[in-house]
Length: 409
Ligand SMILES: C[S@@+](CC[C@H](N)C(=O)[O-])C[C@H]1O[C@@H](n2cnc3c(N)ncnc32)[C@H](O)[C@@H]1O
Image (tube, rainbow, N blue to C red; front, side, top):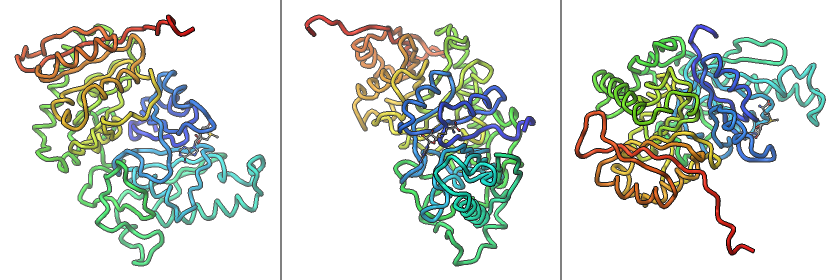
């Protein structure tokens, strides 16, 4: 797909994220996802390589992404039992794929006729798994798109015709309306089909503009957001262009290959990431689990991100990001947990010599600077691009330091 139709992907069971790394070079942004299991620090390895990755597992809770978001999902030898437990794991892939999105599978049981050996199973077992998989995918309205050698590709239905034709007592059942499709923060998995909202006609893979037009086109799902409108989207997009221009003056490393792994800790529409699109960075866009859900807009623009509650640890290893950006997070959420805990978590995930851009109400800035000094960050307080009195920009660098050994022997 070289024509910009596929722009975002998720690799479940990513290993060291070579699939996502290869696609990144082709202009496709992948969230590589794996737990810390017997494969050890695979996600840390991926982030060390400068490839977007987060810790995560398909298990009992929904993945922290909205519905109908990824253009493509992939599993290579991830051995997730897709057809077990009423198809609950595959139903989660179905939920997060956008209409028309691709489901790419390799490893058992694909091409079991030639590849069944070496997985502690028999050809008969794998044949039966493959048949079950085919049936389950059909009952979720996926269609076989292509199959060649060791790789099989299915496509999620582009419209709702197939779902409306499913029998009333279809299995797996359709989810009832009480289950919010985008609720994905500590939301238990349920073995039911999330049918896409038919009101969104332009969010399917073939109706959404192709990359890169997609980045600056107002997504129709902005209408789900309170006050989301064409003018608020345009305004946000222009505002971030100006802010990034200013931030590059305050932090000249931004836009150079010294900064690669970037997190926008509380984005609205992904404007910070969009304004950095021509730079050698990738941005993990985080939408607070307590804020308005704007993550579908981020995905519709062809950017990637996750939900998170900043009163908790983020699903990553220590020292994995080069730059953290935060815009009025404390103004919005300081009543929920103490500022020092958020700052300590930022210190954990920031690489030594990494940078932080904090844009906050002046009321918080000196308090933040005092805690930052205690963590041995070097900070300078700057004006915003508009020279506001009430809002300031704090630019900090985490210093490389070692604990003294004195008294430890
Ligand atoms: C054999 S490795 C394959 C890695 C890589 N896809 C490849 O083909 O080289 C299996 C991968 O699946 C991941 N995995 C296993 N169960 C998982 C689950 N329930 N959710 C997410 N990842 C899982 C493992 O952590 C590991 O990354």
